Image (cartoon, rainbow, N blue to C red; front, side, top):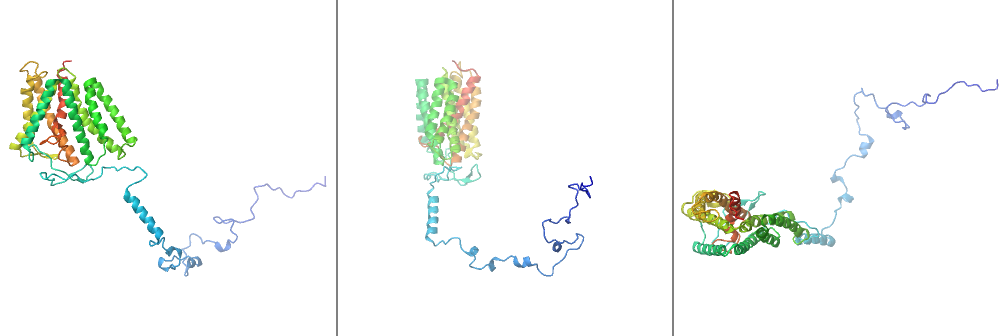
Length: 419
């Protein structure tokens, strides 16, 4: 028992006192700590009378002090070198050619100069402002006073056109339908050609077909055909640009295409909707007479008494011409249409004709001014030149496009449909 070793002390691991003294805030790995002692934080800052050794070695140097042989002073490339010259020439050629492997359409239609004006047409004095705040060149538009218009030719053309329409009415709804569809197709062609001259790239062929289909579908299948044709038009217009038939600014040009279809095709499809009814010829005649009354009254009274400018979109139209046109439209509708079925079931019944006269007198100027706004935005005087003395078909039938749906819904409201 005496042979057992004696323990002098018991040591518990983890409670030993470290033999190394470590100063708080100093690294335990520093070998020489005696020379790196920092002064107490309460001491004032020390100033050095001479620069430290590292400052002397790392003083910043200005670019003027850098030797010329240093790599930073050498040029990146020598423009006189043949390889550099060929590089820049290649880039310039590719940029000027405008041909790229990527499809990058413009956001807005290109600013192309308009065709030269005829000698008898003067340019506008003040350019109009477009929707983006930029200025566009404009043209002087025809006005309600008929200034600059060959009146004898315009009268002869108007009488011939009126005779053709009356003959179509006399021959029946089918012939009227054919003539009206033909006029709508020509008006759509004028519109799409006009917007193309302004720099847009609509799906013209597709739009013209859609305009004809809307009127024919409305005549054959009544109101159910209109939304179907519009749906198909939207789908095929997307495919037109998706498949690459046209690739310029798809979103912009799809909008222009659909606008033409809605403006001419959908408004014009009320011809087919009215002609489908047994009283359709009478409704069409009432719409035509109201429109002719407005155009004729505005022209004559504007020439005689026009003094006050009407609107910025058509600065040459006058307030006197507008009021005169509305008054004549109302008078013609009441006095003449009141004798025609269905607005005059019995001769002298002016109640329905009075309502139509008020509606047509309000709507016809709107159609005229809206088309003036479109032409002013496009910077053109007329949509076409197919009608001597008048311009294009769309110029002559702009008010009628708005009077057609007004007449249709007035007849529906007054329950004048016979079948």
